[in-house]
Image (cartoon, rainbow, N blue to C red; front, side, top):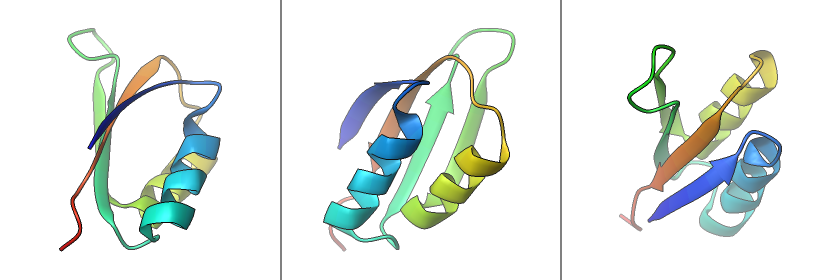
Length: 69
């Protein structure tokens, strides 16, 4: 599943995805694709939530959530 999200909603959206799909669901997000400060993070939804909480996210995000295993 692919989602597009703004910096203002990324944490809440990841939290809602973890609640609905489960915190151990594999996922990744990329921000600022094809720009100087491009970043990609991979892990579980729970790990991505922690990453967003400990960094200062900027830009727009593409979130990819793995299917049910």
